[in-house]
Image 1 (tube, rainbow, N blue to C red):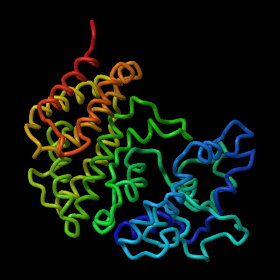
Image 2 (tube, rainbow, N blue to C red; image 1 turned 60 degrees about the horizontal axis):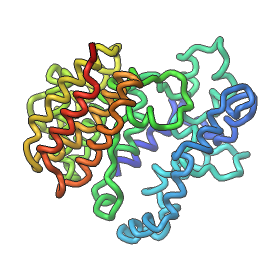
Image 3 (cartoon, one colour; image 1 turned 180 degrees about the vertical axis):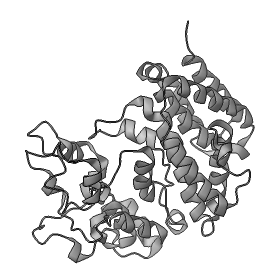
Length: 350
């Protein structure tokens, strides 16, 4: 299963055999445990749903999905733990011998890489970013790097899981970064437009990988291809057709290019206007997938216009979410009206 391959590959550092030390190794008061003002571990434990991802596997819903897949215990199946508790999938020799307590959930090293070789020096001010990365700390500075680290679980799921009742995943990096309790200091809402564009190009790449085994991805591929070409200067990178092979390569090219661009409010405003105008092309329920692609785009772009714009548009953004709850109830005319209302609320005032 490709999802498992992706996550296991993510868990291997540049050194190739570094050991996982567990979140406890990050939690001392002199590091990320809160004593020196850096409370990343406390934020993760108390506020971040990633810390409780393992608990999902012992729910009744997971049991029903597992029964459909003929999995005896989802909390012990690699097909489930690979995303909900990645350290369960690590080889025993990759786990530090003194790590006794369980490390259930998605903890520090699942995203940042096994800590054996960077733990003791990575916070020192005289250590360069290149030195940290060489020691195994995953580089998450760019939107492209962050999207690649998240999409394996948040945007890549097998058809058999969906058939068994697993919810469809809607990966969009900007909303995740804004709504998650932050344990970082380098992201603000002005970066939301870039995070949306990069993450959707990365998602398009992953959906193209899934296309052969999961025909259900076709509409999502078409919708993302459409919105990225029409509103995001994607025509310079994406081919006019949606053949998965060429498209997955060009989608990643677009993601890398967009990640290198410096965004500002004026650029976000132009992007918002182009994207909102696409609502006129969503003419009926057959274009529901396009509406599904437009809503997270407009949300991220509204966030990128600043806190005031996002606050003013709260009601309109909720209305857009409600408009795409189900294909059966989708009304293209009402959807277009909701987009027009949003555009009016966030329009530049004299």
